Length: 101
Image (cartoon, rainbow, N blue to C red):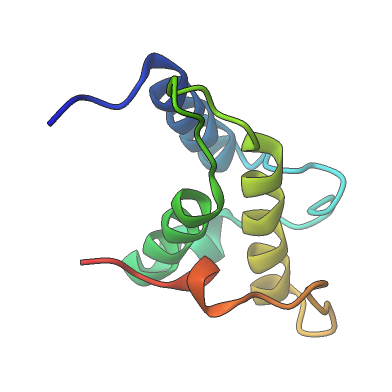
């Protein structure tokens, strides 16, 4: 089995950096310090990475096609956790939030 491409590894690294810094989709999450919510329990952090990994698309050459979309869907999930009045549009589909073993 091969390794993840350099592009995928870079996307994952930057995603983790933005997540830890509190700078994922600054516009959608402006005013929300989500870090205590996400880092409070392992299951919240697990869900964040599941959504990112499920939504991320990679072409045959291992190049990431939609990093911004994957980060935005994560930001929507985080916002919904921090702000009960926020409605995710479009709603999450089951495959987006599925946790894989």
